[in-house]
Amino acid sequence: MKLHNSTADIFVPDGKPVAEALQRITHLGIGAHQDDLEFMAYHGILACHQSETQWFGGVTCTDGAGSSRTGPYAKYSDAQMMQVRRREQNAAAVVGRYGAMIQLDYPSRAVKSPTETALRDDLKQILTAAHPEIVYTHNPADKHDTHIGVVIATLHALRELPRAERPKKVVGCEVWRDLDWLPDADKVLLDVSAHENLAAALNGIFDSQIAGGKRYDLATMGRRRANATYFESHGSDTVTQLWFAMDLTPLVVDETRDIVEYVTGYIDKFKTDVTQKLSKRLGR
Image 1 (tube, one colour):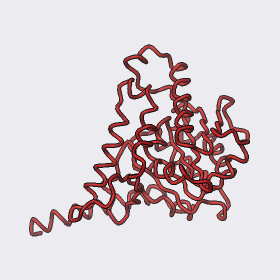
Image 2 (cartoon, helix red, strand yellow):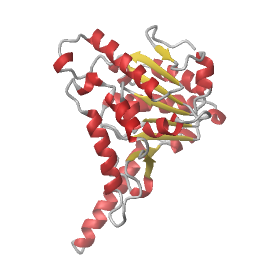
Image 3 (tube, rainbow, N blue to C red):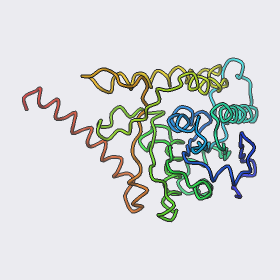
Image 4 (cartoon, rainbow, N blue to C red):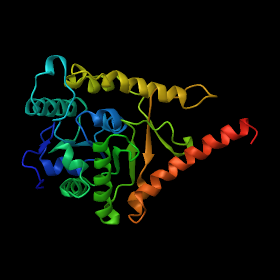
């Protein structure tokens, strides 16, 4: 596998040869930044953590140069921050027992570009080598432009695979915009209740962000608990932590389907639901 950036890194925690490590991947997370995988794709990490037949693989697309930094990291240069964030992500791969961790080292501007194709091509190589059953990535209604760049590149890469090699399931997970607004019937519910200690350990590895001014660790666990409690208003909680995702599989099964129309179709459903509820109470 020849990735575009010479600084890209493939880390295999258990030391297997890269080709062998990638071939065993069943659950693949493709995220924009270091720590995105641990927040949004914990469902896949959890499914594979104690398994000998299922393996989680991670792909982080950006280099970490634009990270928030205060406190002990306030004077770090972009180059220093990139090194720290790469080490943190690989440490998470060890703790999470990932089958492989790939860091593609793109600057955010390249990921956000609508014309550059290098990221798409790298992801296509990885997907071909790994042939995962399920892919976790960002949702296309996220508010972070870099996240949108990653999900679009991921969808394009998946659509270029032969149909028989495409994953069975592709989900777009909440991070910078939650998916509580999705109609309940359309939410992909990811139960992430188990092994809270593992989740806390993974979230806490990213000290450069926590000590650097962003308590993503607390926010992530809070959202998971809030999702579980507020999902159902008339019944007792059956799970303690939930993460929401959007089903992107139809966009991969049918490469002619318009991405914008697909996503805004969910938004239209949300608008209809709000309109109907308000109109009913107003007697309209």
